[in-house]
Image 1 (spheres, rainbow, N blue to C red):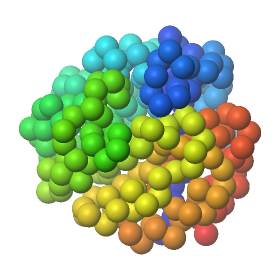
Image 2: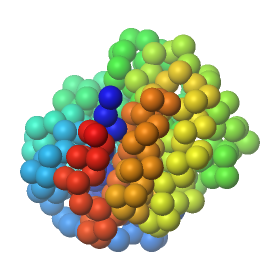
Image 3: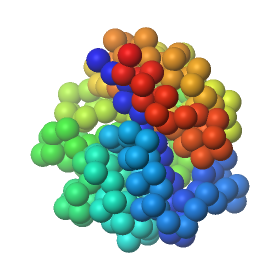
Image 4: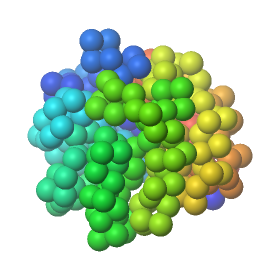
Length: 243
C-alpha cells in the first residue's frame, strides 16, 4: 500500500496560484502556463494531479475550463478536478473531457442526494471534499462555515460509493504550518471511505508522518505551496509515499 502524492495546480484567471487560507485576495501567482506545470510534475514522477478551479468554487460553475483541458492534454497520469461542481451536468462535463475523478464540496452539504446519486451511477469517480474550520464544514469556497461537524458530513456518504474523502484543514492551507495529521487520521478511522489529506504540507516530514497511516485509510496527500516554494522535492515525496 502506498501513499499517493497529489501535486496541486490551483487556477485563478487561467494562472497557477496558491491561496492563503482560501482567501482569493491572498493569492500568489506561480505561473501562467498550467500545462507546462503539469508536465513538470509528470517529469518528477507524479502519476496523479489535483486541479482546482478557484474561480469556479466561488462562482458555482466552471470558469477555468480551457486551462483544465490543457492540463488534461499535457499530463499522462490521472487528474482529479474540483471547484464549482454543483450538478450532474458539471460532473459529466469533466468526466467527458478525460478527468479521472471529480471533487464535490459545497454541494455535498447542500445537495447530498445529488452527490449520492452521482456516486452510485459513477463508482470510483466521485470524491467528496470535506473542508473544515475548527472541525466544522466550510463551504462556498471556504467563505462560509456551517454548523455541521466534519465526521457527520462524511458519514452521510458512507454507503454511497464515493471514491474518497478529501479532507482539508482550511486554517492551514497555503500557510506551510504542517498537515493536521491527527484530525485527518481521526476522520479516516471514523469512516470506511479512503481519506486524502490536504492543507498545510510544509515539507518531507509531513509525508513521513502520514505514510504509516495508510493502514488507517489515508489514501494520499495533496501538496501545493511547499512544492512551488522548493520546500518539498516531489520525487523524494513520491519515494517516501511508496516505501
